[in-house]
Length: 467
Image 1 (cartoon, rainbow, N blue to C red):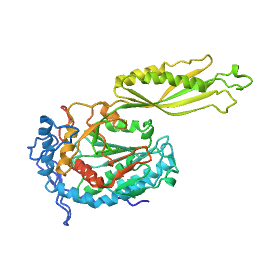
Image 2 (image 1 turned 180 degrees about the horizontal axis):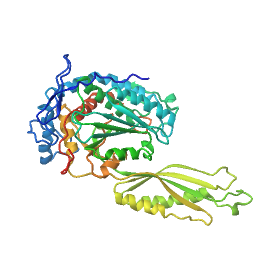
Image 3 (image 1 turned 90 degrees about the vertical axis):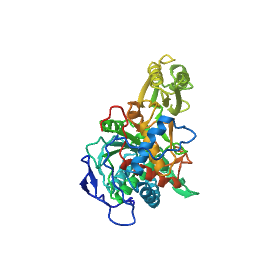
Image 4 (image 1 turned 135 degrees about the vertical axis):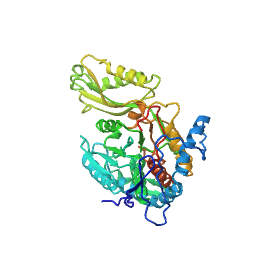
């Protein structure tokens, strides 16, 4: 078993605060800074003392500036010593998180390889349990998923949901010619940014809180699915189940390469296009055959025209078919990846694909949706982003957000209007490519940010909130 990132046990609650919540006992005397959880309930108004410097990519409006200061005051005033404590401890833990990411990346876990995914699931369970989580394995057809829970200081509040995955796009054996390596401040290897770095950072954030004698402000649930890279065809049910009653949803996917969080995602659908023809000898009886390969090629031309409509993009990711050069192909298929900027574009394109018909007598064409994620549109105003941006400012970080081209498990809550942000994983680049890497100098800031987000009360995120 790889070494986990282990903090001190959380201190028990000791005294009642004015609003009836329990305040934790102080951490044991040491060089750590004292951290006290505020009595203010979620959504309470706080006066502002700290403002946020926005990046050039997303100017801060007057309304955003005014509301963003609320969280800054909550952390800087109601939690004395928190910024210094989190930043200092995060720097101390960064080395352990780097090693943890390396160890996780060395456990190859391609989508569909149940034994390897299950081995990694057990390793992740052990690490998160060491930070105070309860863990259970949820069987899946292509590998077990994980559901982990941490108790909060106020168990009456709606839970915070975090979503992640432990499968990668890299086949077994990739490490043989591309080992995990560290050079020039970068950690490179298959799956380090997507998303074993994010899982290691979250483990570090919980370890940091435990080391300070703290629990999250509210209960936290983490769902780690084993099939995200193929669209979460089975894992989606677990994410959906945990959405009920969630105050907000965070994703552990990597952020934009410049560190910005992800505030919207395009929809995505995987479609299998299967063509059946009729086999025959390619020399003696060619007239008796119907080539499935030829039919598939022509169908792909049609499909490309359908996908050329506004708001739709197509990637023909895999094509196979036929058996021998002297045999008319009796079967061929293609796996298509489609991305959509709007729900309307997604519906229109999938309806058109479902109506495909054969172009050759004797051929048959079938379309099958393998997995689908709805578009998560950008929304005007984003109190969750303002809250996180303000926490980052208190920690001395500049942070913003923007839409992303890829899809993930945050598409589901985002499409339903739940307060959702993604990109809390490791800062880096090259997901699904041979230059995949994370920036080691950004580990400590991400650990501190996630720990702060877990510890500080959420503001009111919706007009009609559950807590």
